[in-house]
Length: 332
Image 1 (cartoon, rainbow, N blue to C red):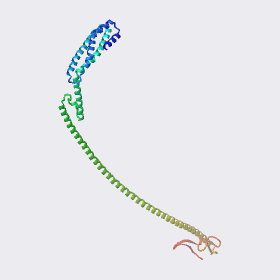
Image 2 (cartoon, rainbow, N blue to C red; image 1 turned 60 degrees about the vertical axis):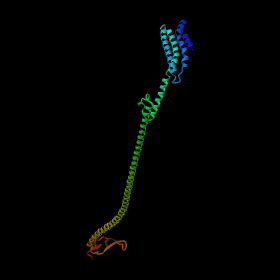
Image 3 (cartoon, rainbow, N blue to C red; image 1 turned 90 degrees about the horizontal axis):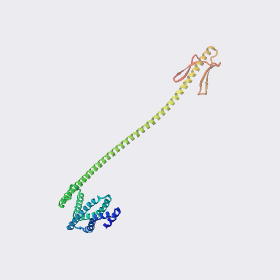
Image 4 (spheres, one colour; image 1 turned 180 degrees about the horizontal axis):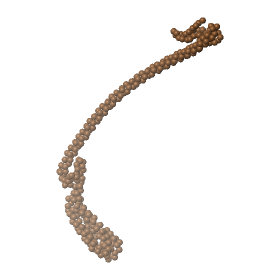
């Protein structure tokens, strides 16, 4: 397979056959190395840590392959100096060979380091397990050298971490209990205060309602009294108005009577004066006629005339013992 790859690559470069042959001959020993060690190296497989002979054999084989790889590199550099094309060919051939040798070396290195790799894997897994254990206990794994710690030392660390965790959990439980007790105390205190405030508000409300009832009763009483007073005032006012109307009517009637009386007196006086004049003027006529209107007993004085029909003044009006008096003097 390696020969086919090399032939295909060299043909693709386009160098003359002589140079191709020279280059292939220069790298021929390394082709032999690949052919010699490929199957042999991959057949060397370590499966247990106690296979130390196989590990040593892999180590020695890897050294041989490494030396061949270094020789190949030297050969590549030496051949590449001839020309660019030769360099491309040399690089390609060397790369192909290196690609073939590399896996052989890697495999041999893996077999050589099998025990170390297995040990490193165990240490890594143990460290990861220890980290998880400490983290589950709430401890900080970064403060411990877990890789170099013996199992007994780690057990001591775990024991201490468990004790600390238990202490921490007890402290946390106590803290929670204290917080719950404090919360309960605060709740009870708040409930008591709320009840006290509610009772006080209820008492204040009851007092306010009682006061409002007293005020309403007082307002009702005053309204009733005011209504009665207003009713009495209206009755008194109505009575006064009636009395005033009656008084004014009486006064009006009296005024009218006084007016009529005064008017009658004036007429009588005027007639009396005329009568006196007539008496004095006509001594031969001594008779007088007193005229009344209406019918007995509701007669009303009108005037006094003589037989000649002239008005005669025969006296004067006055008031005596509650009566209107017509006084006539010099009666013949």
